[in-house]
Image (cartoon, rainbow, N blue to C red; front, side, top):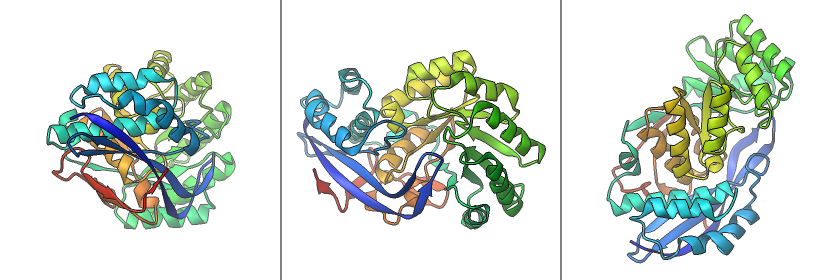
Length: 362
């Protein structure tokens, strides 16, 4: 099975309601979709989500680097040599993690089709069903309380609460949610780099003292502030997770060498795809550190890829793969099944994607 062509498409999907974090407010998901074509007629699907404030990648840059550099690196290669293909992809340019992720997952999709098996089975096959949390955007405490209650009524037992814009109001937000959902629901906080180190410590301790029972706090300080991240980790009882501080396997090594965090959040758009995500998870597992598999605002294309990776590996113990449920439409035919928090897998080979509606070639 040889790669003979790579085609690019734009996919625009409105959100059910604006998605608000400490970094941005978004009303639609604007994706670049890749189709990797082979000489035997099989197609591999991939997706890149532009997130300039996190990865530095925008749609024009993603498409440009694929068209002008990465496509030529892959055309003519054999899918059976997946190690060679993905090493070549990752050595071809610096950065451009979202573009690499799109091509990486498409190649893995084809690898599953080559071996006629769902991808998660080829990557490890640890479990056949997984559960995700649901994200609650930053809004007033009253609106966040209502959103949290609706999520719990829909079957979610773990919520990811966006905070980081105002530490005093953040306390009221989390307190309102905890009072509403009760003690049986796990609350994960994500500050998206919104706090200073001492502010983070004060805020988390206040929530601990109030008995708000946080499962973890994600990326409380700026991505570059590893000393600040380490300080927060050492000063609070709640586990601290690195997200925007973690892109590469080298970042993973540095974070764990410093003992700057307790947990890691792997995202395909940051890692550059499944291949390097596997390396990050292996380093973390060797150091006794558990990982979460997270996402940007992505469609079910790349969420399917992330879900297959998460199902394959036992060290990936937490999931934040709710993005398709925040979208008003699902143009992806096939892929993983998503019913509330439950994510399931079909017996179809690769990622199980059969087609995508509403694509515009670019």
